[in-house]
Length: 485
Image (cartoon, rainbow, N blue to C red):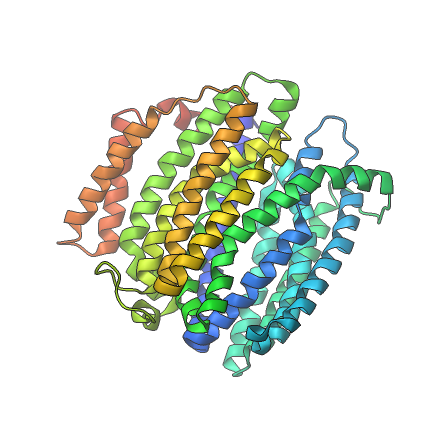
């Protein structure tokens, strides 16, 4: 199987898997929002937002450094994977325990402390599982990771629905996550036996080498998550569970959507890293194709969800969240989950492109150069949230997210350009932008006579058709993906 087809297969497997797991997640979110209500779902959102900070500390860059390490020629996979999995177990156990204990001293978290301890255990299983995902990614067999993820998600959904039916509380429902993530880990370990044999290893010299490799990456990831998650935590501290509950569904949709560029770039990451190590001249063309694909994918997605936001919130969270509000309208915009999602969709667009440059920097081994930009982003994000959240609540948090993601893209491009002499062409952006405007116009007028969902579908078809006619989608790229050789 050719390299292009391998990447296409890997991406398609993840795409199909993500559709399946997204549907499972949305069914669960729909059940939880209707069962817990706005405030209860706000507590649920706060628990996972809080623990996500410690999940990044537990990962601390292990995943991408591991993927980069095993992309090197003549690597001893058994030694590398076994040592890193052993390191991650002890690191994760320590970090999640500390995170759970720290929640005991936060007065606002008194009602959710038990839930935080349960979520800590569930996150430990996910952290260990990501080592196996790194191996599947390196072997371009992410379909195996999809299988195990679906197993875990199905268990979480079924057990949660049974607990909801039995009228159990939030803390009891959270045990479904621990069980599902444990089964996910066990299935990954079973499938991963084909590629390496795990034995606990304590090569402390190798641990020290890996530690110094991951340290800058870990700092970058921690800073990254602070500016990505701090808005939810600041909402919980400055406002309350109702505001977090209103912000929760649109932010959940944002998290789902930004997975797609991460998935695509993650699939080509081992290839990019390999090309950099071997100084392969195909690197620049690979980056160009990736950039073109990400941009032409981002435009219809962002436009579609801006129009479909009311339906998306209604389907995901229920009618209550479509109209729920704790503040007055802003600039004649209703201060609801719908408006928050429409604002956040702009951030999704920036995120599509920034993923490519961020992963390129990691492949170059220059992640330490991201520390200062990310520190600036954290400061800017916190200051903006402190200014905007007290007055505009969740809409202020959404605006801050958009501005932060724009700066992320700018900094990532600048750092990547400093350390790699690439000459990417941005002329396709003009074609895609023009067809995107045509799509907006088409949907705007079509929805006057047709249901909005049908209008969006027709708008996407018009977008793709126009883009092909003006050369925004190259025939060679389509043939390369589907060719049999």
